[in-house]
Amino acid sequence: MKLAVLAEELRKARRKSGLTQKELGEMIGVTRQMITRIESGTQNVTIKTLQKLTGALEYDFTIELKQKKRSKRLA
Image (cartoon, rainbow, N blue to C red; front, side, top):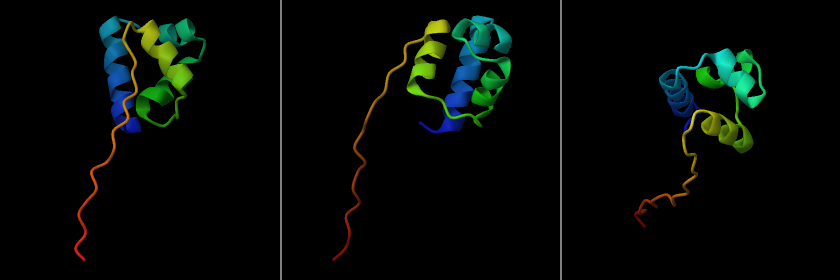
């Protein structure tokens, strides 16, 4: 998942939950500024932080690995 897509989804989830950035940050032990950076797509996020965020927002977090389709090369 691209960082910008993740950022947008997290922002939507926080707003839907009725939480401010400050409230969400306090719930997971980070600053409001870090939440702002996460939601703007400028902050890399660890899996542990994603688990905390999604847990606080009452969302499930899953990782899915998919093999890329290989293009057929002409010989």
